[in-house]
Image 1 (tube, rainbow, N blue to C red):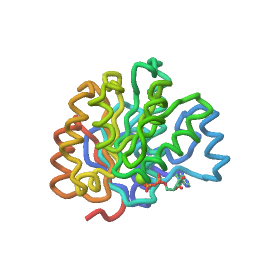
Image 2 (cartoon, rainbow, N blue to C red; image 1 turned 45 degrees about the horizontal axis):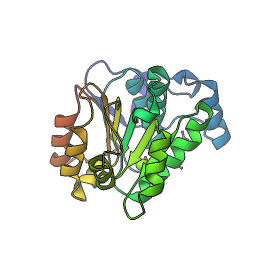
Image 3 (spheres, rainbow, N blue to C red; image 1 turned 30 degrees about the vertical axis):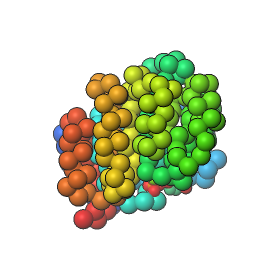
Image 4 (cartoon, helix red, strand yellow; image 1 turned 90 degrees about the vertical axis):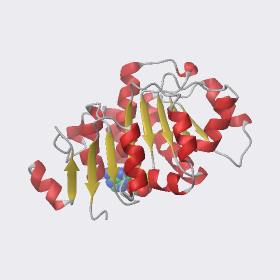
Length: 236
Ligand code: ADP
Ligand code: MG
């Protein structure tokens, strides 16, 4: 049983921001429902990764987060599971639009995120749609029509579908910008800003990035409200 300070030191976690809660060092301490905890067991995971341990309690309190961490650190479940808890609480009708929106730079990454959402959301009957370019829109539109609690999308394809009026973002309460630095490198900033203008300002926003250059700092300061910043390892 380690103190928050000792856990953070051991895992090279640094926090910037006020009132940051203690990390969840075990799955049990998260308070996630039994059926989700069972998924961790089945996946053979023994403990939360440092980014999960520190970002879960922050996200579950409803706070905005900017997390700077390298790839392979378990960020996907770090943001998905608190989003699932919010979904369960809000109980919105998925046919009116998603509650959770995840923006991702590429088709490949978006697909991987949706795979995790399916696996960990199945027991809670969470539905999802994955929207990306380079594939026909038909099946993606059908998934939206059926109702998707979670939409994982690349910015370009989501804007195409928004322009067709085939999805509404007015119910989005939890917005994730995954691999934000890469999305900006790929020139998606105008697309991202256009999407965010359609999301209610009263929302929770989480941004994940591997690097922390000034372009990323700028968009974080524009889109996040009083965030807690979590850095894992050496991030400069
Ligand atoms: P990132 O987005 O930080 O690059 P991912 O979320 O893609 O990382 O996770 C990387 C891998 O680690 C995935 O295969 C994922 O299933 C696995 N993983 C996630 N959480 C844990 C955990 N708590 N323990 C062990 N492996 C985990
Ligand atoms: Mg990732």
